[in-house]
Length: 183
Image (cartoon, rainbow, N blue to C red):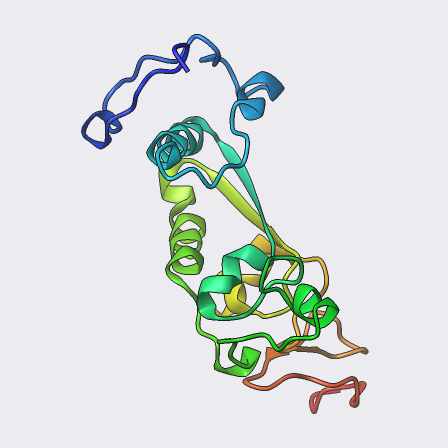
């Protein structure tokens, strides 16, 4: 589109000219509406550049993740073309998936962890919200007080008597024990 500026990686660290469709004021709904999801590889550099600008300008950042962040860790999503539910509905097996216990945090997980861990030194506050139960954000180093795991974490065991006591296990936890050894 002609109302969008082209951002080059070489200029991202410098000042930039805002596209006419974007405000330089605090991020607005109008700005966010310009970031429609796309799989178009040609527009990806522009989208990454726009995201970098938003992150650089923001003081508070909330990142919401779902199954897509873990697909490169070979954990299948649910609704994608090779997702668990899609494959079940089509009577086929999910190919190339690994057990969640074998999955490792991806480059994206580690990048978000670096952002969370360096936020204070950058004058920012970063918080993650995840729909995933795979525990990869926590395993990548995101502290418990910087993430909300909406559907839980299959590797987190919490004492029912002392909710502040939690253990991240290397195996999927069951609801068996109601207290920890210190109770």
